[in-house]
Length: 259
Image 1 (tube, rainbow, N blue to C red):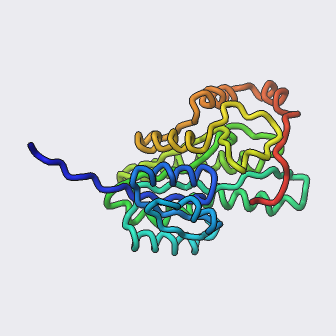
Image 2: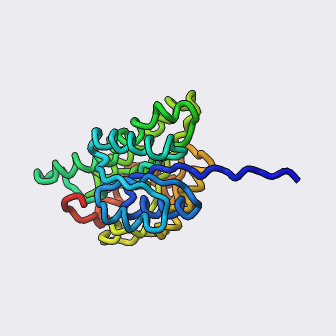
């Protein structure tokens, strides 16, 4: 009877791994034996995430392109070319255009949620072109329509979705899949401050498992969970007067400085 060689462990690099969905994704892949590279701003959070896992830790902010270049170089040297790169880092905070003090908040959110994707993926592309792989960007249902009080976040996630779509087309010729995952509400510290109902809220481990299935199937665009996919489809096609009447007075995410 012929023996089959054991498959090599996946090499997975994840940003935003110090908490929330990024941490849950790290634990999901780590439990399956993956070799992990975990990046985040808080080293203590990364250490908590990495407990018991085969992981290298990199303290860095995705808004810092130079730092992310150094992190990617370290991962490539220590672990090798990743099979999967997941850009899960992000900032969600309320902000208002009428408030002059919120201008830096808008910049921080856009830098993290949009340019953070670029800074995460770009350093790995040269190496991945020889063997393919998957890049996954975490967008959000919040990017489907503009939410009052959440203009920075909604705009950043809409931009992220369109950027990832363009990147998907650019990289197809190189055998690199680009997967966009747009979650609804996930039970994380970022959402627990929301002063409104959050239908179909998922636990972080459940969201991570769903996102991992999308990645394994190389699905171009997925909204999770499926119930929220129906909601997002409805929201996208609501006529403007109807949408405005429903959401004009909707509760708003608290303003504040990005965490």
